[in-house]
Image (cartoon, rainbow, N blue to C red; front, side, top):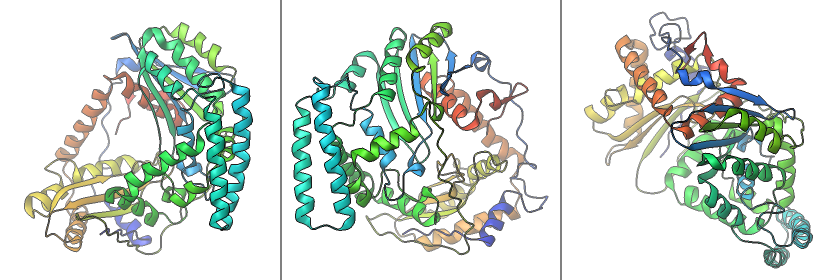
Length: 482
């Protein structure tokens, strides 16, 4: 069972009071009441530089020569929020297509393949139209059979798995992921293979081929079945966002709804790529053992010829303030889970750091208020969690509290205790000692992440993509970490 209270004004007042934004001077979990101490910027960031290409693509470079490895990232500011209406899952589907090779990688006869894939595209348009219009099953089956035959013919010109096999030879830990907000292509490689990585990524961005589309669509459908339809936890979180957001595309699952996946086609993929995969909508990062001057030259050599295009707008949808509590119940499996969510804050909202501290106060460590009350004192939960964004990054997300219940405990009883603890944060100010403890943990995690090239590349590429300039994270030599 999921209980998902999401209030209008009352809930906003509650959460804002908890964050010290309602004129109360005794709320300690607030940006003004609990200022963050200044930290000396780690010297490693003094070596960060950006390379801005004329087509709008920016790369962040951070050389470090501890080990002969380099971590590379390409981030595209496109995710599930950018999918056209009725096409949930499209951004994620394109990410899969980006591993299918190019017009020179993974094909033996590009011209012959192109002719067959053009036929696949036209039949795909017809299949989508038939599915959306509710055509007879015989018509749909005939089109599906024709497409299967065409893809089988196209496969005679394909070298299966050529792209991953090449990457296997020159890199390791290469992968990609799509979230609600972004798509990231990642790899780690030996230092002497840096140029190979640039060649591969340049080819992927400029000349991808949408081959094996419908067979790969079957893979994505199975992924949805495993991670959502047959997974109570995945189904629960899909319901949480679908209930919490009424109009914003954060309400849709990144993997896509099954009925939308059924109607995706290769033409949608091409149009999606043309709109969103423009240099001005991308950011790259390199962290590791490389010479910056040589890296700059290679970046110009391999990425200057990406054709510039307009930077696409966001979805342009603003979630309205809720006017009533919303509740949803999902029954699947044997375990009980409870989620309570509130409207959250945008990435640049000055209240967000305080919200993140509040999440730590509630559920970080055995001494946190919810852990102590629900687990140690009452023995009603296996685990509790809390967060300030639910992972959303481009637009306001959700502040949430979740709990996994012990056998015999009810959602209603646990929910009542959660509300008591939320009220107690207002009534009993959080001590400076507790806030400092949480800050120390966050600080330690931040500095621990600086040890890894991969973690640093991920950090820098997101800072650049979301904040515009990496150096904005460092003001007057002080680190602005949460």
